[in-house]
Image 1 (tube, rainbow, N blue to C red):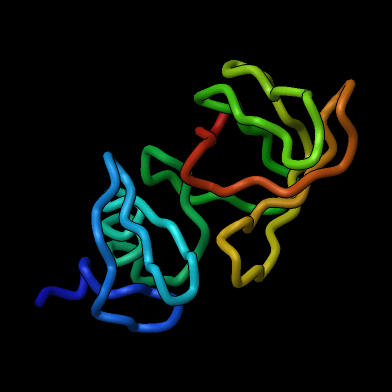
Image 2 (image 1 turned 90 degrees about the vertical axis):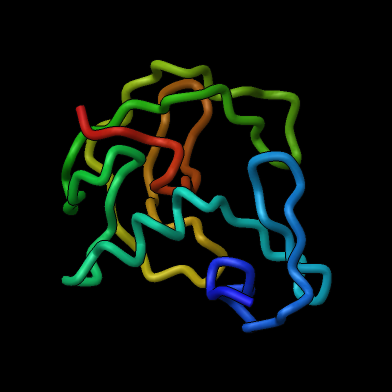
Length: 116
């Protein structure tokens, strides 16, 4: 079994593929094969966007697809520009903290944004 099939969070070997995502039934962690490849190619351990560009605090990013806001009926539309991001060390994959106009403060995953 390859490392891409193991859960990066709990190292479970029971992960399965659901569409374009991998899902761990033990810890409910979801990840994409592309995100795992980008993370492995990052030697400096920094946060990278969907295209592999390094991100830093204060950068501006653009959301690449519509994202549902958990606990709300709101949606962050693809193409929304987010300014002044802060990088966080979250274990759930949401490694960008930001404030989006009309929605408020929220966390994003770097795999759903590209550097502006």
